[in-house]
Image 1 (spheres, rainbow, N blue to C red):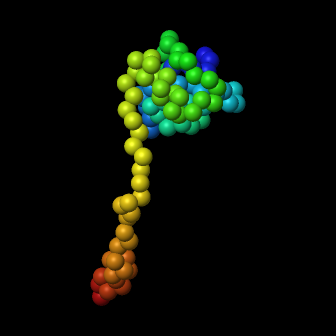
Image 2: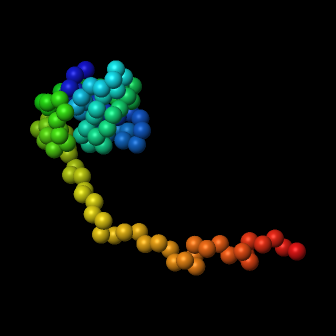
Image 3: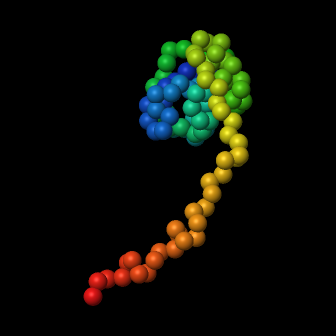
Length: 106
């Protein structure tokens, strides 16, 4: 296991996705990036592949994705979210609990 080690997440929200070890943190944890979110991950949540990719320690996400594409792994571009569509609040009359509907029957 070293920086650039190719892995597959086996637990959590990103399970089944390919990632690369970018940095070693505290003993059971590493920093991963790739087709997953860039975050701290426990080593027991990773399945190690025999392949390595050429990345430096603390490489940026763009460098990791470029290295994955050079290794022959299909990389899907991540969408950049824009805040054009904001969630609008419900009208006031829908948010207020009507006391008449919740009162017990006499």
